[in-house]
Structure formats: structure tokens, C-alpha cells
Length: 360
Image (cartoon, rainbow, N blue to C red; front, top):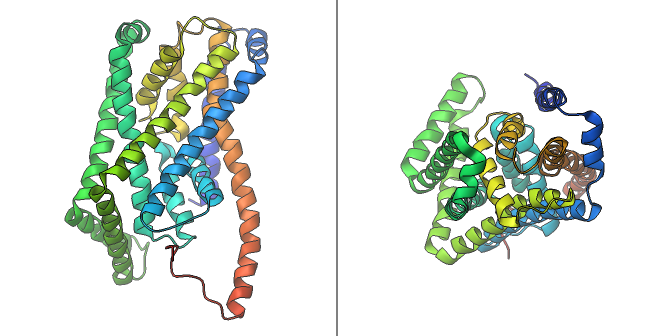
């Protein structure tokens, strides 16, 4: 299947799922009432919601930047932010968010960051965020136990499944980071499988490159393990990134003129929702996110306000990133075309690019 066709099918799935959710929702809710509730959103809180999402992206950028600089590599803050946006965009349009990190590795490699180092930067960021998600989620669940039990009820099994998925993901990352020999064997197996499926024509050369990337990856991870302070900083960044993201729904809640529950209550339920729906294998966890939201927030948002809150929440946490990411990718494509011409001119002048992005 061609990439363009696959991308089109993913978009059809995303917006098809949204259409189904809206059709089902409007069977019980008045369209006019929902529109009235959405239009009543306080602009100040809407801007704060956008600021929280921007903070989420900036923390993602900071995590990548900090790791690369500790390893002796450098990319500009603007390009680092682009890599974060690209990761979010491709994660949101691919099933199970499988497209985000490979594209980020690709774009970092365009700035002469070795594949192994780029991969390890993303692995550390993923590990830090997911670990803090489990830790903060557990602390909030314990601290707001009665509140969580009241709003989840018999749906606690969905949250438990989410925790199992999260623990397995974090454990897998740790094992891949520490077990060098099994990872090398896995790399060889993938290369051989690719050769049999005619995905690669030169298995020896491909295997050499992959094993080199694996070696660089483990060397990069080893630097982090030898410097626990670096990992602590990554965990703090992951915590801040998580809180920025989880605060978006509270801003929407206040923007709709509601004030019954405090910030901690909304952050707690939002964290529970995130853990519960994250393992859905659809682009952006479409359908699962809306379904879990309806189950968990049925008593927080009532009547037409619930659908309005869900639409606004999905806009700021998902659809906004799709639109923003698409615009950024188009602008980058236009700029890359110009950069390609400059690169050709540089080559004709017998100037060679640096071997990698390591600082002098």
C-alpha cells in the first residue's frame, strides 16, 4: 500500500470515528444546546488550554535537547521543537502511535545525529514520561481514592488494563536498554526477515549499519546510567510535561463556567482516562478516548455540557495537534526544498557537511 493511500485511510478512520461519536451523541443531545455550550467557552481559559498544550510540546523538546547535549550533540531549539511536533503529528495519524518515533529519528538524523543516539533520546523520553504517568497516576488514585471510585465504579477494570499495558511498556524499554545481546540478535533477525521479504537487497551492509546503530544506542544509554542526575532531570521534565497535558481539561472545565471540582480532581480523572485509553490500537486512540471520557466524566459534565467538553478536550489534545502538525510539516517541506538547493550549491563548491552533529 502506498504511503499516501495509507495516510488517507488513517485520516478517514480518524474523522469517521469522530462522525460516529457525534451521530450517537446527538441522538440524546440537542445540537443547538451543544453549540451554545461550546460558544460559551471563556476565551481566556481557551488560550490557557492552548498554552498547556504548548507547554507539553516544549517539555518534550526540552527532554530531547537535554539528552542530546549531555551526549555532546546539538540541534537548535527551533529544530528540536519541529521534531517534537513531527512526532506528535505522525503518532496521531498512525495506529498505536507507531509512526511518531521513527519519523523523529529520521529528522534528527537529518541533522547528523547518529541513529543510535537519536533512538536512545526518544527511549529515555518515553521511559521518563511513562514512568511518571504510572507513579503520578498511582499517587493520585490513592490520594483521591473515594473520588475515583465514585466516578469509575465498575469501570475500574479498564483502568487496570491500562496500568498493565503501561507497566509492560516500561519494562520492555528497560530490558531493551540493558540487554545488549538479545537486541543484537533481534536486529539480525529483522534484517534477515527483510531480505527474505525482499525489503533489502544488501543484507550484510544493512546488518552492519543496524548493529552499529544498536551499539551506539547502548553506549548512549550507558552514559545515562552512569549519571543518575541526568535521569532525575528527565523524570522531572516528564512530570512537568504530564501535568501540562493533564491540566488542559481543567482549563476547559473552568472555561465552561464550572467550579464544583478542584484542579486535583480534574487532573486525577484525566490521568485515569489517559492510562485507560492509551493502549487502543487506533490513530490517536480514536473512539476509545471518547468512550472512556463518557464513562469517567459523566458526573463531572452533565447534559449538553458533557459533549461540548469532550469536543473541546479532543480539539485541544488531538485535532489541534493534527492541524498544527500538518501546517508545520508543509512549511518544513517548503523550507527543505530550498535547503536542498543550497546543499547542491554547497556540494558543487566542494564543501562537505559535518560527519555528525557533535559539538566541537
